[in-house]
Image 1 (cartoon, helix red, strand yellow):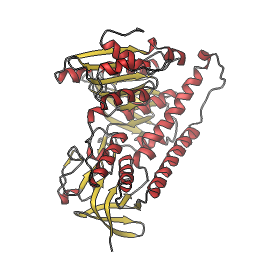
Image 2 (tube, helix red, strand yellow):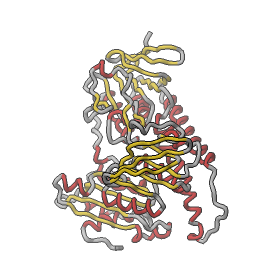
Image 3 (cartoon, one colour):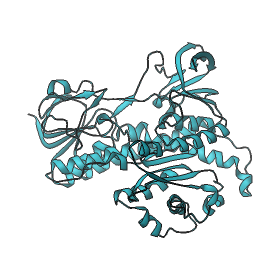
Image 4 (tube, rainbow, N blue to C red):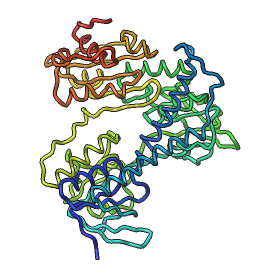
Length: 463
């Protein structure tokens, strides 16, 4: 006999488990189906373990700068295996925490592979056989996986995807990273800091192509200073694999050159996990591997929702989590507000960090806004200088007519933490007036948020 639930969530990544927990809090009888690891890609193979690796690289980098701070550190080195082991331990701890939270909130967890057999009906293949489940509402939170391009497929030896890079079988000596989005540039930053001769190839006209052009340029300047080679408007056409080496055919400006590497990381985007779910049979629309939804994550099929990466950009864990809460509240009879894509921050944890929210200067102008742009460099901030982090920039974009904060863009130390100040401002529909009147603590990096606002109106004090 089938188990019956008010809501069934397929997938336990950030969107899935948050949706399940919020539904249970609202009194719904909830099940969460997971085919592999509780916590999904983010906790096990994405956001969390990569940040643990990058923290090790950051400490290693700071150790080499000890003399600048009046300190001494001899025989600086690292144990790659121990670095990876710490990263896996952090991921395991948090994944275990998800299991605890689901149990605490009385969510039924079913480990197995789900497929939709009819509206409201799910068949789950488990270790013990096939189990039938019904749900008044079903939420797809199946996530996404790395895109594989023909000829660039990972093999785990010479060519890696993100999973291989998180558990590297060796330290690359000469590394090629294909793609300079968040995933590609974070791995490039990690391995470059640990000593790999790193080349990044980006098909667009700049690294971190979704960011503001000015911020991308400043980030690139720092990457190059750290020894990275950056090839823009370039494409890897072919990889010739041989024992211990890969020959990459890289096309730039209409010319193709060959370069040898011992390791390649492919980071060329993601595809949604939509296969074998039975979506087409139910009439759900799929566009380029992502389920098509409205602003409330409804698929158009009665009682079927899709959240997170499987539902399309922006592909961010925090976006998925908020969609999960929204959908759970909707299913429980509430009236939640839809998620506003332009108020979702993006963060990249390379060195230097990059963070942004809202429209870039270019996109704001293209949308017809008359803009006021403010800039404040890290070199003008006392805390940044004291930290030994004087390289960076905070940039603001305001609507000249209304004072609305249209966007904010940052590069530098800890900007992934600073961006939230502007995110809260956008959510509260703050104008420049409120930001100018806000008292920021001194000495902090956050003072730059104030100065970048003042700068847009010709009132910056410290620069």
